[in-house]
Image (cartoon, rainbow, N blue to C red; front, side, top):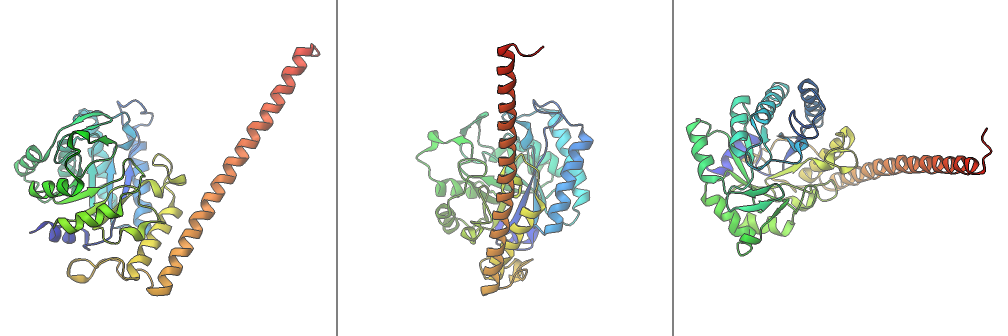
Length: 346
């Protein structure tokens, strides 16, 4: 089965698939680890339930909390912990496509986790062409990884390959453009390619998306910077991987906001209802009729934007109140110091 057909078969549609991120809290053995595994798993499941309630199409699990990352081999404790998290999420979301990424560039470990936990896809770093990332050198992974997938009998697990990966320097391959890199990934049998901005939460170029879509026969996903405001710019994407925007304040490490997640999915349904997202396999895309078309779809998008603006205003007011409290405390402290200086305290 060709890559596009496999993608549509898994996700139920060929275009506009929403893949929501679960950024797992710092795992045992990593510098910021403070929680026991039971609490880490419980938080991941809580987020999964929110995603199920708002109607995302799929979920991608990533050990984002493990900063700073170790290139290539994060340790057996991370692989074991991610397997435990993913097994629990598989039980929580038995009917959703689930994927995993193990940072940084731990593609073989991610494949093993996916196989053990019954997941459906892996997001792969460094599939073709080496690059220098913030955690070190990342070598091209396609050859060894596909051989490992075949050896494990795991060909059903899709490999979605990052192209010119974020948080990385690509000077060594500066003469190889995004389109040529995507074509190389296609030649090396990727099941899909992922385009990103320069870092987490940075917008992906809509121009690059159009260029890559025109060049390859693979599914092309947007892997960073998707927001309620720009979701319409990515109508041509096979999938939208979104995480930071769904958190309070748009920060990846913040708490998942049910309101923001729900508003985002409302906007996606509005785009789909207005004809901006193609249907699924056979033209019957899941969720394709989820929003009213035409003027109704536009109204839903405006309402969603207004809701996001109100939430941002509330967060700003909370921050302002905190600043005022600090200023009042500083004034009181200054007065106390002045009294002490004058020797009036007995």
